[in-house]
Length: 307
Image (tube, rainbow, N blue to C red; front, side, top):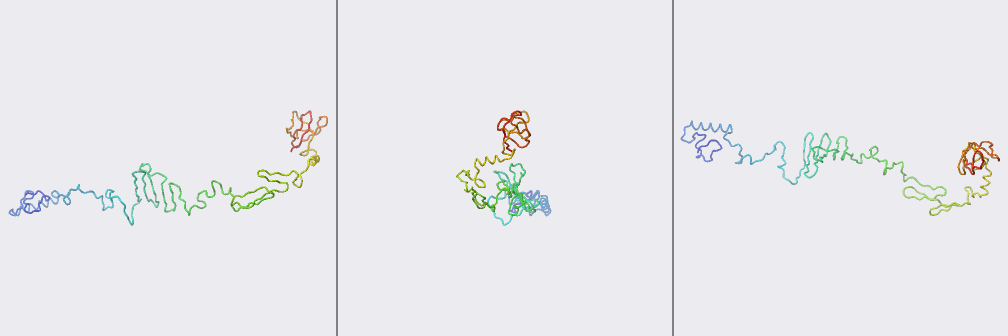
């Protein structure tokens, strides 16, 4: 049987009588065999006679591309599902990154760049990372942020940290009472202690002072330095006032036109001391007076100095 290329070579030697039309049977001249050998070698050299797309009898389409396994790239199709244990996982590069692509929600990415470890996310699947980033740890400063806010630790939450550490419920420390402060009751008051708990300060009963549930009364017979003055005593006090003193009465007449009705006030600079005939005498010129009668510039009346 004639063979046109090496791929047609039969494993039974007796079946191989011809290669490329050149007889290689034992009775053929040596020159014919030499020509056949040259044909075979030429086919091997240029690949025309070698079935290079077969491996163990299988065509190349039977196999899958290994994805350059010798270069370190493993296609996802070659990884089976399940759990695997590793003692160490090394990812090396200028900006090494792990992509966690979630088919149900936003994707996350883990990346290291210039000493900053970041967890990034693409919430709207736009292909860009949104800010603020979920997590960033700066190896040079030793600080971190969580969604843009500084991560507070026992090492950075003291004075000057930026926290409102000097306020309680928005009230500055200066507006708070420390528990070391004490309550000392004064005259007529009861209740002692510090501000570590609720304290009651009450008006205590004393001479002439009666303390009720909701009222405090003072005996009218008691005076600041003894007994309260009687009506006669009060009258005597008023009578003893100097002319024009606060609390004294006088007959006055208005300097300018107009009327001052009872209960209304008028400046002393607009008043004269009045004579009995409703004529002006001399100017009062001091204090504020309240009319007891009707005062005009033609009719006198009584007035009380109130200041």
